[in-house]
Length: 357
Ligand SMILES: NC(=O)C1=CN([C@@H]2O[C@H](COP(=O)(O)OP(=O)(O)OC[C@H]3O[C@@H](n4cnc5c(N)ncnc54)[C@H](OP(=O)(O)O)[C@@H]3O)[C@@H](O)[C@H]2O)C=CC1
Ligand SMILES: Nc1c(N[C@@H]2O[C@H](COP(=O)(O)O)[C@@H](O)[C@H]2O)[nH]c(=O)[nH]c1=O
Ligand SMILES: [Zn+2]
Image 1 (cartoon, rainbow, N blue to C red):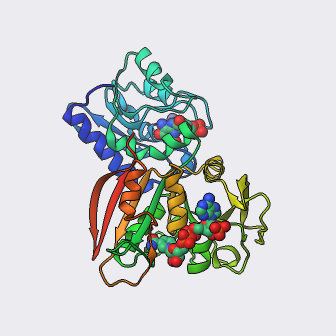
Image 2: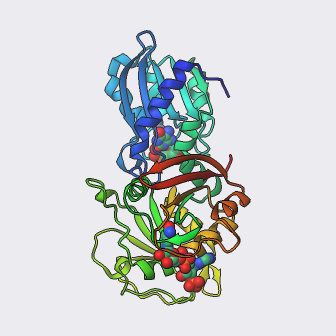
Image 3: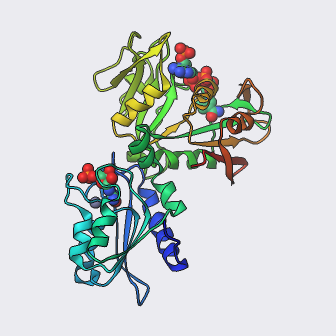
């Protein structure tokens, strides 16, 4: 791994900022960005993110936009360029053909079809390659990494509690808007059956202009099963719904709702198998917006990568304790996640905990 110069780091930071709003739009492919830069003027020549649905990859689009200006330029790319014939030709070959002199890569690609091969192809053509482990690029591609390395999505759990750690109705106001933005950058949003029954939500994105980015809505069934009386299952929202259920449980749903059957015990789907089933569908980033039981079960199974804990203002109507073992933040830490930051959203505080790499 190479140390980045301050200049290189600024360009890679810019590439990550450019790609981030497109998370959730690239299907089962990583959401990467490529910037082609004139190294003498330090000026941007062309830029691109992975196209909607995941193809073409950003290098190919940016090179086409740059035309002959790519010759002698530096390419900044958040993920190692591919070197395989998939549904598009190898980007590494296109970079060589364009006469790019230097390539700075945010993070190596673990995908077995292309890992190391992209860098080797570029170096064998005499291109100077800087392969970094740039933290924002690593974070941008966390879903891709989990998906390709562990065959499960990157799991982010969001939960709102009162100042005395009681479960509250899911957040409203600025925190709700923020949560909607996270939904738009996820490939799927998951809730448990009890939450689906209790809140009977649509799980759509309410932010103006982003409704069409509503991700796949997934309900995890328990032993009681599920039926079409729920909004998410029987309603006509136009957004996709899937149900994960143990093999023996009864599900009554229209054909438009996909039912994923996984192994389990006592009518409950096994959580690892449930995440594997979502990964099989190409889900890289999963947002969980559930109540205390499913949240604790995921935490205790070691399946949570990032936890966003919202603490609401005092006085919000509060229900039962969020965790039966003490403060929610303690349970999160006990499971190996560490606090990485804090934000204010109106009267609410949002703390982040992440699993160290
Ligand atoms: N403050 C917040 O951020 C949020 C709060 N809520 C609130 O939480 C409450 C519901 O929370 P809760 O009762 O925990 O329900 P959840 O829906 O979060 O989780 C439990 C449900 O998931 C099912 N399930 C399936 N497999 C598993 C498994 N392996 N482990 C655990 N559960 C599994 C359970 O089935 P079974 O019935 O068989 O046990 C049950 O239906 C509601 O009052 C809701 O308003 C909900 C979302 C967010
Ligand atoms: N660099 C890079 C990708 N590179 C590699 O290509 C793989 C997908 O190939 P294919 O199925 O042929 O599109 C993907 O798993 C990743 O390993 N993909 C992207 O969508 N964007 C990118 O910037
Ligand atoms: Zn490519």
